[in-house]
Length: 260
Image 1 (cartoon, rainbow, N blue to C red):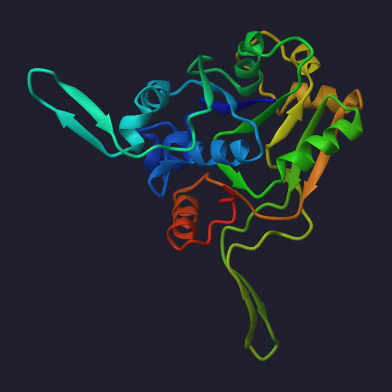
Image 2 (tube, rainbow, N blue to C red; image 1 turned 45 degrees about the vertical axis):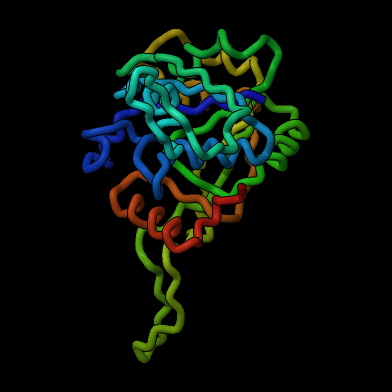
């Protein structure tokens, strides 16, 4: 299946980073978070990507246009016959990346509508946001979607805590400490969706419409929205503190989303 990734938002809650680059290009380690998301999908065999660009989309285009320059060691010949020799290969050589301009001010439903021409009629596709990481089993997600018979399946996840959670005895002694716990009861849309081609019929040709409003509400009314409940790791990157947390996990070799 093709993987559609929403990469066009302005990320205003992460202004420390997004003033200078689009949110999907904020680095985790030495690669953008977008690369980590794509590596996760590629691990499950999905290597055809459609990126819905908007705010500072040229930076994403530059990253992929010059992928070898960004990811490999290189030797330059500066003489009469200039050239470049790239030394280390990478595992992304079988990726296909479509970079689609979907408007700087567009909302999510319109961005998806804009890339309809890249999805063959009748073909389902995967859809997610360019700012969240998870340990979701994409194969199991697709199987759950097929079993449901619905037009769209989203991943229902427990929102990540923004602070360490404490359990304190009446004496004041701390009994447990959990860093960035997942809340036990609440469930939210974690992205990582599977959609039938008929989803495009729910998307108006209007740049002001968000997928998460009228289209999702209509899917619910029509009984066409399914949930795949994920109990494992899920972490958005909405704030600078969350960026630091994801980088900490990566630098310490504790990144649970690294399945490749």
